[in-house]
Length: 275
Image (tube, rainbow, N blue to C red; front, side, top):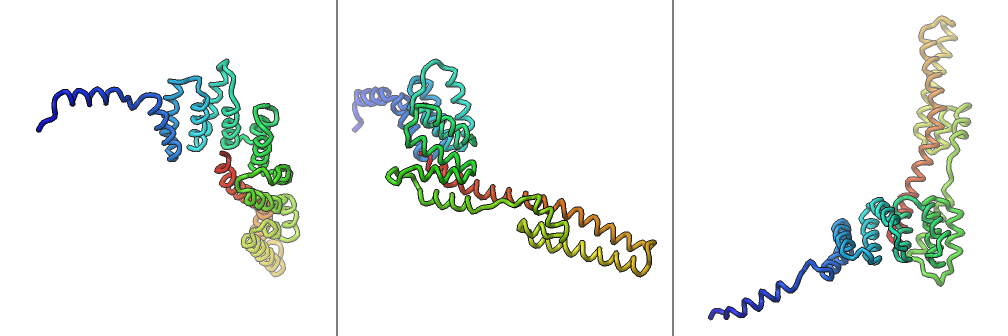
């Protein structure tokens, strides 16, 4: 039996009355995209919602959060700069997300200055932001003071891991490039060994030592006019000079590797706990 025609009319009217693109449905969809880590799509949806409700700071904060978590913090900072041209005041919610954007975007010094100078942040927010900024800048003594200034009663996500990373940073000592160069003056390769590149140090010592010995033997047997004596002597001088430069460079290279490892581990620990 076919349903009556008026039932089709009723269903059609009911469906048309439910606009799946209205504000309520769109906001629920944007929240779902953000929670399911579809940050690019979430940002696009929040941009459309802000066009509909330009005065809603919760939407604006969620947009900045989508940019930050979607690894596009620079877009969030650009958006913030545009909002700064508007006369309307910014809320604490927006300033909080802006401080996180600065940390995520590679501007920890600006984040620290912001929370220290603005009355928008409470004591807990300020302490945590300063702690994270010091860690991201690898200012380990300052980071130690920052985390000790936060009472144990104030719960910090992964506090034990943060403390362990700070200890590791404090134990990490830089190699002095000029000390490495000076060590390679009397003993070729010693500066590279000091920098942690033992194999290169041994190779430098062998190359300089062998060619110096060969040059000495040739000059001793054949006199100052020997061709091979000068060849070996030139090799020895070239390897010796390169060893001095290489020792300086090795110390700088090892310092950069340590910095990069610590920076990677710091970002992997700090960025997820910003919320």
